[in-house]
Length: 534
Image 1 (tube, rainbow, N blue to C red):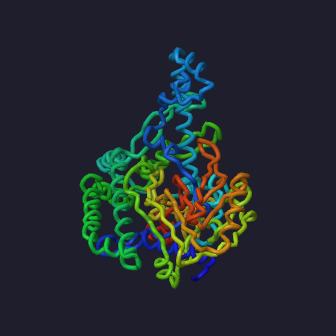
Image 2: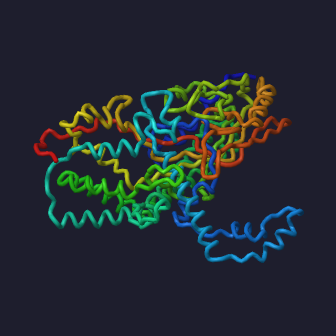
Image 3: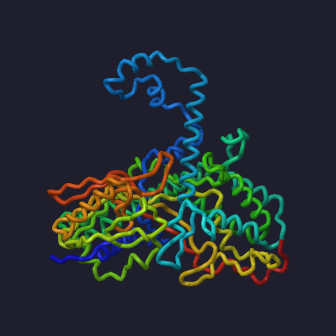
């Protein structure tokens, strides 16, 4: 029996997970985005948090609300008489309108909460990502949307003029990539226009997500089959590898045929080419897209930019991959150079411990580490995992890396600013940005023969009962309060522990991190041949 510290076990777990998310071969190309911003602790989520993605921002009257008014829902025995009387309650048009308004307000709150959750810039130069720790709090550097708006406002572009025919073609392509819808502002009842992804972009991202999940399954099974001492995993890979390869290739074919992959990328290529002829036109269009995506929060009163996930029903959809970690995985990755504390931006540490102060991820002062040591021969972990693309119709990453713009040299406020300095790691206003959300559900851990577990369990129960802390293992949220609020209130998880089998299960889903694209080239880096700027 080999007892190891939690930090050692976390590095091994994350090493295998990193390989699954980024590995490649002849069937699955290696992921171009291989930087991750891990959330510690993971953020608990529920399917109801994302109703705005499938329903939109227009409220409906839900049957559960009508049952609640009529008293025909799940009532206690003592309330049976009162409920029976309420069955005769007349549902007036005014009541229906009130219910729709309440549902609409809830959808806007969901949209605001999610947009703020992913509106951050990961710090690729630091082992502790303080910006990520304060997702809902504006810091001195600003959010992704604020930095992007600043770049558009402070930039100059090459002066030129496009022919009318090309301008018409750009307008046609813009209508294929985004749609503008009219929404009612809940604060002052004025009508506002909101830019959302077009059906073409939604289909593109849905099929891309399906392809990535097929690739995730392929990589996971391949790594299990090639490294595990589990006979079943070895048999599965040797007997089903061709089926998994076929699924990956079929997913790619679906992406091409039904996800408009080639059309979408041809449009992107055309716009990139046009950028070399009239950047002023495109810049104005990008500013319009940003403004149309702006919404105002109901409770906060502050602005946010509409952002979505594809598919919107990912919590209930198929395509989740089973992840397992056992003693054989630990043995195979114990000599790996992967270091959870250095290879990715993160919050907190690679330990099994308690997050104090109500689980707030904005401070590390309340963290305490338990005295658990894992028996590497008997420890096990399993969960289902998926990665969901983040869609921002207002964010044009191609503009950031174009050679045809610069910061206004006459403006002292922008003097010395860079999107990225091209360093390793890069520094700047937007050295990286999140592209996909990494989610897990149905987390299970086996602690058999681990040292110090009994004492740790007692302290966890006390912390969980008081609601004063969150229990974490690396980016995995095991129980207690998280400290982040949502449309349904403060979010927490409740674990179940079986003392006979020393197994902990954590129901529900959680966000454990984000896959990020790193801008590793210098930007802005304007072409020296440009003589006129506007």
